[in-house]
Image 1 (tube, rainbow, N blue to C red):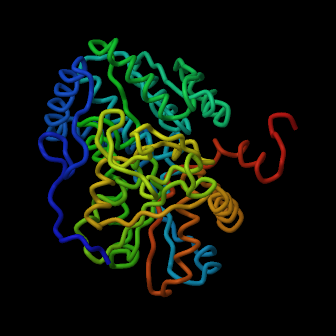
Image 2 (cartoon, one colour):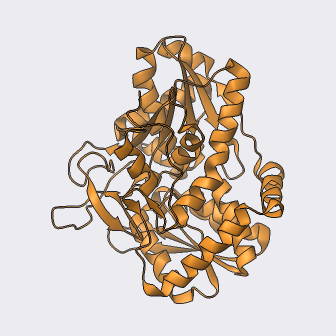
Length: 408
């Protein structure tokens, strides 16, 4: 049961703070652009015309609503709670990321900006951004760490086919954090002509709020669907957490439902040792990274630590500020799954349900494997299947079978 006092206040405040987290920690050159973006977004979300166009495209172009699927064979195998999967993997482009990319593309039209930049880790946000740029005729540049490009080669090709320029980032660890750095440098230089479609519930205000709001459709649908199927709310929600967009989208519409427990699953990597994981609540600390104050992995001198995860989308040193606040409030529990546990979940869901999950989602699957057998058959779990695993098949084949499928 949550330790939070319900109902929770509406967050963030007018300055972008979730309690002591969030805010706007950016160069002066970006302050005007962020303030303008916040103003445009505030008007857009109150504008019935904007919302109607977003709803139309989410349905006709993206493929919403996504099903809430009862995983009968997996439920039987686990021998405990009834498990439903929220099938974000069935969306156009293969993951939840398109919800936010589409919403921000419509905002870019209102801002009058025709050039779009984005960062990407696992490549799904990059593909989603490239997709909406093709749809609206925007110029598109995606920054991606060289390490992530190698393990997500399929998504790199997809972005290029969609017309995006994919820029390899070789600095530092050459993963998601460095890709964000390069995207922000670009934005500082070209802020008058460029909109930055940030891919997770991270960064400076208003991005954590906007990204959350564009993904709330996940939880809104799940709530309606589970009530229609079971005539009651679920006992537990589970989602993987990198920056935290898919989890925030599922959790937010349920935050004031006291009987609904929520668990976010971070990347435990090779174990909770320095530079071997990306589980921010396992030994992390309060700090500022890439525009926001939040919980992150840093050493005693405040230097950001290296991270590791088999999943490129969870391999990031900071968590979204609203997640940090929800953790502090005790409303959401946060745990982790290791690389090995995620790979086991990846294989189990594939073989038992015929659904290959993204390695990010496989972390949530791994935790459900642990907790469902401890619950009653009368209990209900909804787990967010945030993306499909096509992009991870080559990497998984090397790990599981010792084969490079591109050389077979």
